[in-house]
Image 1 (cartoon, helix red, strand yellow):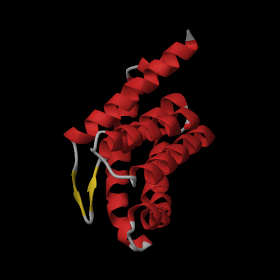
Image 2 (cartoon, helix red, strand yellow):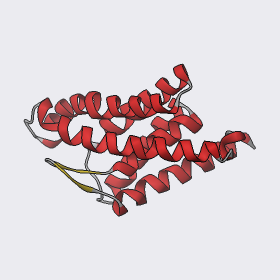
Image 3 (cartoon, one colour):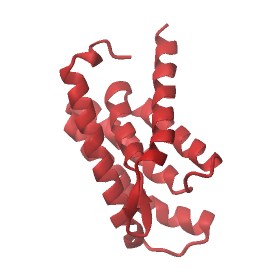
Image 4 (spheres, one colour):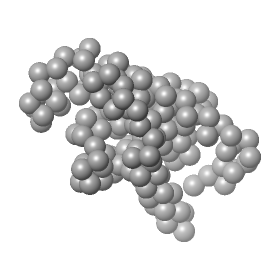
Length: 163
């Protein structure tokens, strides 16, 4: 029963992240900002932990790429951000730290991972500072949205019976 609940919750987060990215986005420098992905990372990290959050980020990136709705750069940023969000929350038990982990993981570390990724898979010779501003704008805005949602949901005691 517990495994079914976990997989169902993960599937809902994947659906929200995949479809929500098409509903809420804005231009951010050289790229488009998709804050829903980052909000989902924070929500999944807080409710499920770092492992499931990384799997969810991977599945969202995979589905968006398969549907032609995203780029390969969704993988390094989303997965690193999800891991750090979950790890920071696990260590401190503070939702704000999950949001900080997402911002650092995607905005800084993910943008650095994107450089060789873009060079090898996309044929781009862009440097790290090319990706950092747009990754930061997207991840910080999404992390704040995720933090706000998780804080409000927790106030309503909906997360009392965690998955």
